[in-house]
Image (cartoon, rainbow, N blue to C red; front, side, top):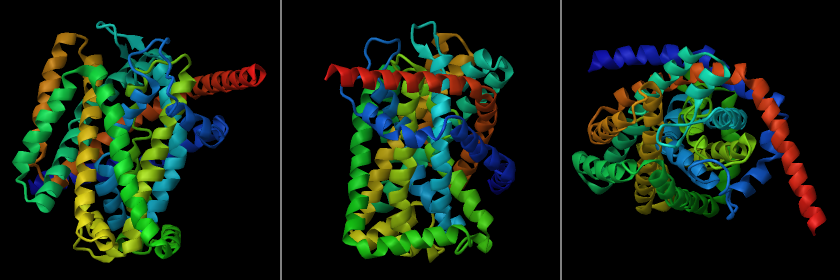
Length: 453
């Protein structure tokens, strides 16, 4: 096992080296410039669209805007928001939180571009359902099917790590430590829950996540805000520490600024998945009249995941000062931070939050994985095989070493990102064109609304 960990560690360090981090953030910066800071200009409209009751029911698609966003949020709001943020702070210091924010801001543009292309190049599969994502825009848009195949291979495999084993492992450990429940029991319960939803397909997944995601996000948001409201005097010093550490490397491994940047960006991407190409698979299933409209909804995913939920974890940890205790790792650090402010209720809040987040991620990533599998093997009858194996891994993952799971997930994440980012850069002209279309459409709708009044 130690040899496997060493090999995976070396591969992970290579994959997540400076070239990929530069490519990830650089793509976001490039798209931000080309679409004219759309993540600022149209964020209020996008958030309004997310929570509009009258969702698009007439356009082609399988699920609503909100259900598509919920499915994507279910997949992204997971252990990365609790364990990933803590790991980033441990390895990169408080400044890692700043670099998570930095990459998330530009990641909103990346996520927008991914969704535009996913809807633009989606197809109707043999079962009459929508199928889209990087593999389709790489094949039909960029005309490079081999890149689409590569992405699908990485995505189908990565689903077992980032969206499955990592999640069930983290839940099993925190439930064991908090409630003294054996890991195998937690794994069994998670497997039964996931199986009941996953076997129902995207319609069932969309319905479950549209109720599940708002509840879990609101629960964690209320807990975090409670901590901050009760300790207002600690907020500004914590934020000041985050900003100063971002450029000094204070408390980072080796005191290097590079550690803060690397782990901040890497764990931020692990959480919000901007640039990985996973979320557009869900966006492609949405009922929408224009690619840009669903893309605006998808863009809010990064805002909610990183700039809201991850911020709660990161600021709470820095406020507590517990990150200096090197004996605390992963969820243990987040738990200790919340316990410092909420007493005995702290560990319970973190445990429940992690259970919610990880369970939903398993459901969302099951859909991503099977869509990648479907692209590779066009026979619909084979999907049940993938689903059964995926469900079984939920149980297996609960008893696997956390280090191995994290390393495996890191490697697959990086490999997924490479062909996807190539597609985004190569099809940036299409993204700009569709952006002009949706901006023009929004102006028309606003003018029509004013004249109607």
